[in-house]
Length: 219
Image 1 (cartoon, rainbow, N blue to C red):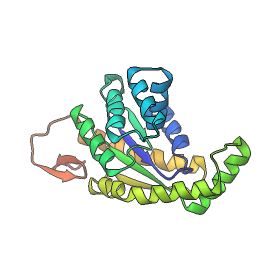
Image 2 (image 1 turned 180 degrees about the horizontal axis):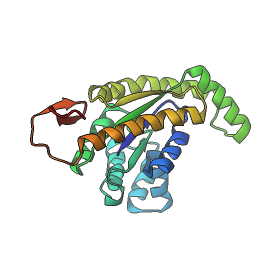
Image 3 (image 1 turned 90 degrees about the vertical axis):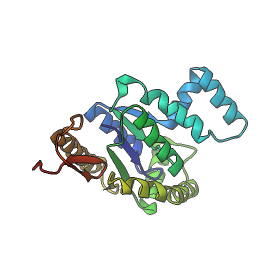
């Protein structure tokens, strides 16, 4: 199973991703972490990324896509990936879809953590007091939230069209949110098991979201 999880900064994507990884034995892909790791390891790819950043430029969708493909192509991670905060725009969403298809995979569920700006600001203040993070401030939180909201709609529409989008109320406790997400994932896993994701049926099929099931099946 491959999962996409996204939400505004401060929504708890990282926390929930870690919990999903542990419970469902997945491999987490955070583009920020992948970029930092390549730079730290001083790989050829990392040197290229470092040069781009040092020149004051943003890492392109193509470069990020190449980095993502490096992990998708790893057979150890096949159908065991959770994409944390990626894709960030429609181009990346379409690129991810194409890369997964290239390696006979797909996104099985896209989780959207919905949290209000007021809740985000409250969490930022609490985190700043606890962790003393210099990048945490109400002004920065508002700017990041606004940027997220402006960029996310095309991605939401993209996954809605494939019936993959599941919206999760991110206002509750970590445990409450985790339980909700686990229920959604268990439901998808159960459906994949019932339809026999890797089988070929002999009868006529009809579309069901991004999957196809036997028209005459009662399952």
